Amino acid sequence: MRLPSPLARRIVSQLQRETEAMDLCLIWAQDRAGATGRDNKIPWHVPEDMRHFRELTLGCPVIMGWRTWEAIGKKALPGRQNIVLLRENDQLEMSGAVRASNIGDAIMLAGTARPAKAFIIGGPDLHARALPVAQRLYVTEVDIEVEAADAFAPAVLPTQWMRHVESDLRPSRAGLRYRFVEYRRAGRH
Image (cartoon, rainbow, N blue to C red):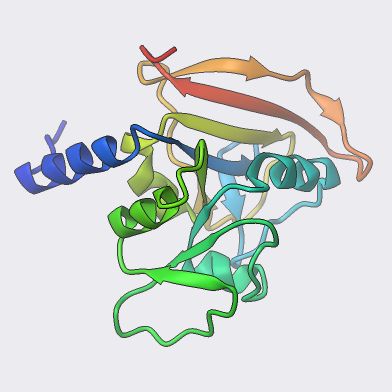
């Protein structure tokens, strides 16, 4: 196993200090194999998951990458501070959102209003980069396997994460079965 570089350890340490006042949460839906998307789209329709997402994130800052911003139609999610990660020279239409050039800046922007929680909503690369400093994961498990998936959730290791709340597998109005799982970082109450 490769150990993180000293720079990476310093960045993780700084982000952990910045998130002490709020819970940094990651939220995503995945199929049985951990796939989250195909062609920058969610490859299923589960209305109950969309409602669950809205209920959890409403009133909280949401942090996303530019592909997620494009996938939601370049429109800010109402009732939330929308923060989009972009490189300095990227010119993207940003009506209703603020830009951040890195994850640390995005977390600092999210914390300015002193929310109890902030959510990383995607994409998968951003989820993977934020996983070391997150305190909670909200995962919808959809009982399907997507062919030709090209986006995948980060691995949720049982040595680092505990299932805190888990609903039963239930049928969606759209026909697919799904369940909601909330993970908390192991060793944290």
